[in-house]
Length: 141
Image (cartoon, rainbow, N blue to C red; front, top):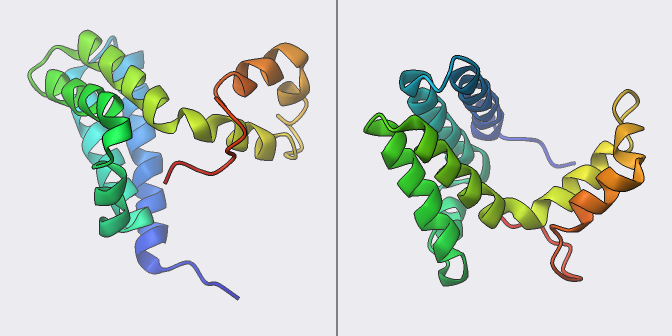
Protein backbone atom coordinates (compact mmCIF):
# COMPACT_ATOMS: atom_id res chain seq x y z
CA UNK A 1 0.00 0.00 0.00
CA UNK A 2 1.40 3.39 -1.02
CA UNK A 3 0.94 6.01 1.66
CA UNK A 4 0.88 9.68 0.75
CA UNK A 5 3.80 11.56 2.27
CA UNK A 6 3.30 14.52 4.56
CA UNK A 7 4.88 16.83 1.97
CA UNK A 8 2.33 15.73 -0.62
CA UNK A 9 -0.53 16.30 1.83
CA UNK A 10 0.72 19.79 2.70
CA UNK A 11 1.35 20.48 -0.99
CA UNK A 12 -2.18 19.48 -1.92
CA UNK A 13 -3.53 21.85 0.71
CA UNK A 14 -1.33 24.66 -0.57
CA UNK A 15 -2.44 23.94 -4.14
CA UNK A 16 -6.04 24.20 -3.00
CA UNK A 17 -5.37 27.45 -1.12
CA UNK A 18 -3.55 28.83 -4.14
CA UNK A 19 -6.55 28.10 -6.34
CA UNK A 20 -8.87 29.68 -3.74
CA UNK A 21 -6.78 32.86 -3.61
CA UNK A 22 -6.58 32.99 -7.41
CA UNK A 23 -10.37 32.70 -7.63
CA UNK A 24 -10.83 35.34 -4.95
CA UNK A 25 -8.39 37.62 -6.75
CA UNK A 26 -10.40 37.32 -9.95
CA UNK A 27 -13.68 37.70 -8.05
CA UNK A 28 -12.47 40.90 -6.40
CA UNK A 29 -11.82 42.52 -9.78
CA UNK A 30 -8.28 41.24 -10.31
CA UNK A 31 -6.85 42.22 -6.95
CA UNK A 32 -3.13 41.84 -7.56
CA UNK A 33 -2.26 41.05 -3.92
CA UNK A 34 -4.63 38.06 -3.82
CA UNK A 35 -3.50 36.90 -7.24
CA UNK A 36 0.18 37.12 -6.28
CA UNK A 37 -0.48 35.20 -3.06
CA UNK A 38 -2.39 32.58 -5.03
CA UNK A 39 0.49 32.23 -7.49
CA UNK A 40 3.04 31.73 -4.71
CA UNK A 41 0.84 29.19 -2.92
CA UNK A 42 0.12 27.35 -6.18
CA UNK A 43 3.80 27.03 -7.10
CA UNK A 44 4.78 26.04 -3.56
CA UNK A 45 2.00 23.46 -3.41
CA UNK A 46 2.94 22.03 -6.79
CA UNK A 47 6.55 21.70 -5.70
CA UNK A 48 5.63 19.98 -2.42
CA UNK A 49 3.09 17.70 -4.08
CA UNK A 50 5.22 16.30 -6.90
CA UNK A 51 8.71 17.00 -5.52
CA UNK A 52 11.45 19.46 -6.36
CA UNK A 53 13.19 17.36 -9.01
CA UNK A 54 9.98 16.56 -10.90
CA UNK A 55 8.91 20.22 -10.74
CA UNK A 56 12.24 21.36 -12.14
CA UNK A 57 12.10 18.66 -14.82
CA UNK A 58 8.53 19.69 -15.72
CA UNK A 59 9.36 23.39 -16.02
CA UNK A 60 12.59 22.86 -17.94
CA UNK A 61 11.37 20.82 -20.91
CA UNK A 62 12.04 22.45 -24.27
CA UNK A 63 8.76 21.27 -25.84
CA UNK A 64 6.84 23.28 -23.23
CA UNK A 65 8.91 26.45 -23.47
CA UNK A 66 6.04 28.58 -24.83
CA UNK A 67 3.76 27.63 -21.94
CA UNK A 68 6.53 28.05 -19.36
CA UNK A 69 7.41 31.55 -20.55
CA UNK A 70 3.76 32.52 -20.72
CA UNK A 71 2.97 31.16 -17.26
CA UNK A 72 5.95 32.72 -15.48
CA UNK A 73 5.61 35.91 -17.51
CA UNK A 74 2.02 36.11 -16.30
CA UNK A 75 3.16 35.69 -12.71
CA UNK A 76 5.69 38.48 -13.25
CA UNK A 77 2.99 40.74 -14.73
CA UNK A 78 0.73 40.09 -11.72
CA UNK A 79 3.62 40.91 -9.38
CA UNK A 80 4.21 44.28 -11.10
CA UNK A 81 0.48 45.02 -10.74
CA UNK A 82 -0.77 44.28 -14.25
CA UNK A 83 -3.23 41.62 -13.10
CA UNK A 84 -5.57 41.32 -16.09
CA UNK A 85 -2.86 40.83 -18.70
CA UNK A 86 -0.91 38.65 -16.25
CA UNK A 87 -3.87 36.34 -15.65
CA UNK A 88 -4.50 36.03 -19.40
CA UNK A 89 -0.87 35.00 -19.87
CA UNK A 90 -1.07 32.58 -16.98
CA UNK A 91 -4.27 31.02 -18.28
CA UNK A 92 -2.68 30.50 -21.69
CA UNK A 93 0.38 29.00 -20.05
CA UNK A 94 -1.69 26.67 -17.87
CA UNK A 95 -3.71 25.42 -20.82
CA UNK A 96 -0.51 24.92 -22.82
CA UNK A 97 1.25 23.13 -19.95
CA UNK A 98 -1.60 21.08 -18.49
CA UNK A 99 -3.92 20.74 -21.51
CA UNK A 100 -3.10 17.05 -21.88
CA UNK A 101 -4.33 16.46 -18.33
CA UNK A 102 -7.82 17.96 -18.83
CA UNK A 103 -9.35 14.87 -20.55
CA UNK A 104 -7.93 12.61 -17.83
CA UNK A 105 -9.40 14.80 -15.09
CA UNK A 106 -12.76 14.99 -16.88
CA UNK A 107 -12.83 11.20 -17.25
CA UNK A 108 -12.25 10.72 -13.52
CA UNK A 109 -14.84 13.41 -12.66
CA UNK A 110 -17.48 11.46 -14.60
CA UNK A 111 -17.50 8.91 -11.79
CA UNK A 112 -18.34 11.44 -9.08
CA UNK A 113 -21.94 11.31 -7.84
CA UNK A 114 -23.08 14.93 -8.04
CA UNK A 115 -21.19 16.52 -10.93
CA UNK A 116 -20.54 13.36 -12.92
CA UNK A 117 -23.66 13.80 -15.03
CA UNK A 118 -22.45 17.23 -16.17
CA UNK A 119 -19.33 15.69 -17.69
CA UNK A 120 -21.39 13.21 -19.72
CA UNK A 121 -23.10 15.97 -21.74
CA UNK A 122 -21.83 15.56 -25.33
CA UNK A 123 -20.74 19.19 -25.76
CA UNK A 124 -18.69 19.10 -22.55
CA UNK A 125 -17.21 15.70 -23.46
CA UNK A 126 -16.12 17.07 -26.83
CA UNK A 127 -14.69 20.22 -25.22
CA UNK A 128 -12.40 18.17 -22.96
CA UNK A 129 -11.56 15.73 -25.74
CA UNK A 130 -10.31 18.64 -27.86
CA UNK A 131 -7.42 19.12 -25.41
CA UNK A 132 -6.07 15.61 -25.83
CA UNK A 133 -4.12 16.31 -29.02
CA UNK A 134 -3.37 12.66 -29.69
CA UNK A 135 -3.56 9.15 -28.34
CA UNK A 136 -1.09 9.81 -25.51
CA UNK A 137 -3.18 9.67 -22.32
CA UNK A 138 -0.39 10.36 -19.80
CA UNK A 139 -0.51 13.10 -17.21
CA UNK A 140 1.88 15.96 -18.06
CA UNK A 141 3.86 15.71 -14.80
